[in-house]
Image 1: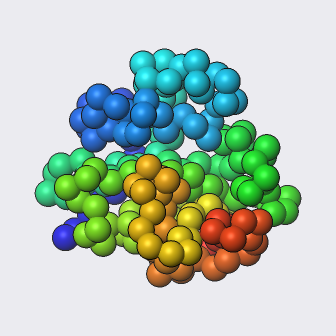
Image 2: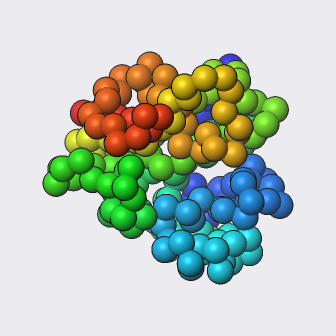
Length: 186
């Protein structure tokens, strides 16, 4: 299965809406969780978060990438300079490791019919290529590493550590038994 990855733009906004569906990917998130203070995120959950993400796209910010299989939008990856995600700075687990300027991958979403089909690694590689083309020197992510059994999909939005390792990332910190911080130098 070949995955094509493109930045979300105003022209691709309808594809993102179709991919995320009426629930905004997961419970009205619209990928605003890492971008907003918790109270604001909760207040905007659903339509407000959709409008907030739409404003980023309309402003030309390219807040993430859409993955396509045979022209159909099937995957999403939120990526950008770490400072675009203020919740990372206040997170006990995901706070900055150092002062290095990094780009962060903070979310992955694959539509249910396409899950468990090996799309995460090409999506991550597409995000790395996107960041490199925009001058990034390091890409960082905050995946989960389940200890036992399957993880409910709602908790897998940061991606799985194994996929990042396969895509050439290395662990640089771990502040939680199940949440490594991984990086790939470009």
